[in-house]
Length: 76
Length: 238
Image 1: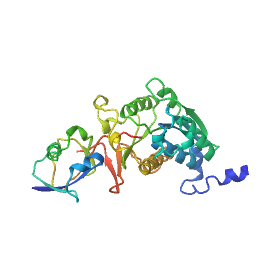
Image 2: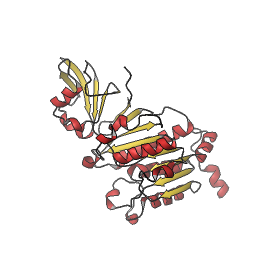
Image 3: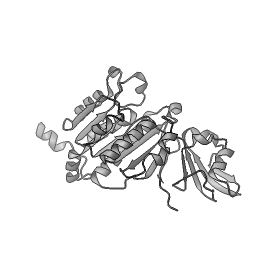
């Protein structure tokens, strides 16, 4: 198992039960697999950031990664 | 009175902004597209800091749903075009600013002509589709865009120049986009709109003065529930 820090923003925050954002996951878990595990509709994720860099859903998560997921935001 | 006014108007800008930079701002031409929650705040801040030429574009009129967050909206202005209200507000703040008020919705047929003489465009629009229309017009006009977007108490700000990938980095290919984001679920809260408008105004001034760190190809994400202010790289380097 590895541990990551995950932040879910705006409407996605309801999918995370961990208050401190720490999550234990299996090695070789991709962002897409984690999104599925958390029950997040895949189309509701627009931006994926890992350690401050934009990534795509095929990124394979590593120990101590900081993952942020953002839905589409377009209001003005 | 006139001499007193001109002498003192920007005295509290100095020396965060130099007198030479203040003169530069007085000559600058900025278009603000969308005059709602973001655009109203940007108008106010750019007028006060002294950006000398503002083009204000929005075809909408105020209604009661705007009052919770849009700085320019007032109970006595219901039904008034937002472009007119913005012009009146700027004149009341700073009569030295040249304002061009365009009470029309930006679209593919008019936007290039409306912004082509500007040094910079500020995206305060409220649909994803319209942001791509602005991107196309700004590329043709060869000017940078400062973009802000909000939902609830979250938002993001970025800057792109004509040859940058722009909105594709945030929203994906245009054909994949829904026109609106999760703000249709969350609504928008006044202080978040003002926070993002402040960040957009700051990016605008930095570009005009060629000073400071600009959010080019970077995305500043804010979330006010969790006090998150983070700058993300939109272009990943292996």
